[in-house]
Amino acid sequence: MSHSSFETKVVHQKFDQKQVQNSKNTPIYQSTAFTFKDLDHLESYYEGGSPYLYSRERNPNTDELSQTIAQLEEAEAGVATSSGMSAILAGILAVASPGDHIVAADDVYGGTHKLLNSELKTFGIEVTMVPFADIDKVKNEIKSNTTLLYTESVSNPFLRVEDLGALVSLAKDNGLYTMVDNTFATPYLLQPFTKGIDLVVHSATKYIGGHSDVTSGVLVGGGELIQKATQKVVTLGANLSPFEAWLTQRGAKTLALRMKQQSHNAKELARALESNDHVHHVYYPEFVSERGNGAIVTIELSERVQVETFFKSLGWIKIAPTLAGVETTVSYPVRTSHRALSDQERENIGINDYVIRLSIGIEEASDIIEQFQAAISQSVN
Ligand SMILES: *Cc1c(COP(=O)(O)O)cnc(C)c1O
Image 1 (cartoon, rainbow, N blue to C red):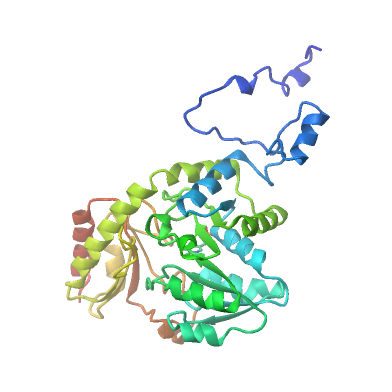
Image 2: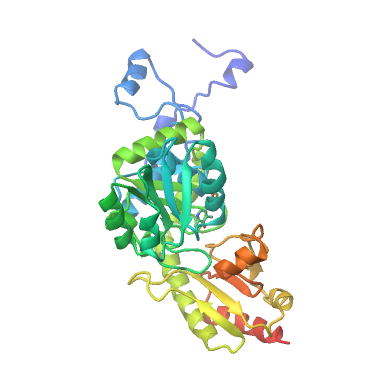
């Protein structure tokens, strides 16, 4: 049958996509669904013969990304999601049901804090938050309905490094699952799954994507748990779009190079700022891995520094309420991530008007150091 009318021709292209081969990069499968040549072919999907049916359920670009990160984390499987937040939710719902209880670190990312303390209640899941630096405090909160211990491998903004070994043994002794947000460390520095953590989650918006141009998330772990989490992602519609998956995958290719340079620069900067008289305290981990200690440096300026002037004196370094891009940026927890807290609540966790979080980029270390030193000296009273 020939397509004679314009109206029919315009939607039935002659182009046979199967003739396009050997593409160096994975094409973007910007398609909501996949077609079938006959009913036997359709039936083969349900028998496991053909992997793709509907993109909310599965798409080659999201598969490529989740498999890449699972491989980097040395985990069995993974699922890509619309954001770090939805990856966290999917992971939690894979191991916790109404009536269950979670013990979580009290210094988790602000969005996670909100998810755990407000949204999970509507799912009938109860959460207790404690400082994970003291493993006995974690142990004391475990109840008969506790199913999960939740924390971050490197915390924000003070970069506390979690003792994953201690956490895994506590969980094993009590028959609990463990879930770790590995966003700050990335699999370049730490692979929590290899240490026995059940679920590892990433805001791929940060270092995995790396270029501040895509919001996405990835959850990795054992095959069975990831299958459960994937069901949640599919049903909640928390799937990642093909283009966003493709962008994240493209960014991930340079993860090792970026983390290597950014960790090196951060270490050099932390060292330089430690000997600056107008920096009261430098928070930078002593040891995350043999590969480096990460690319975030948090500083507390001395009270002689005019903070408003400091932010105006940063030259090419921009203020941005995020982290992990290739450019060095700064963020101000008092006015962004911890804005909703009272002065007293902020004081309790050590955040005051002089605390600034620096996300170090891939520039030359000496340029970064020079710019921060100049900004500090220009803003001293
Ligand atoms: C940004 C971030 C998240 C949330 O990720 P989104 O991609 O913004 O949803 C979760 N955890 C950590 C540690 C983060 O930095």
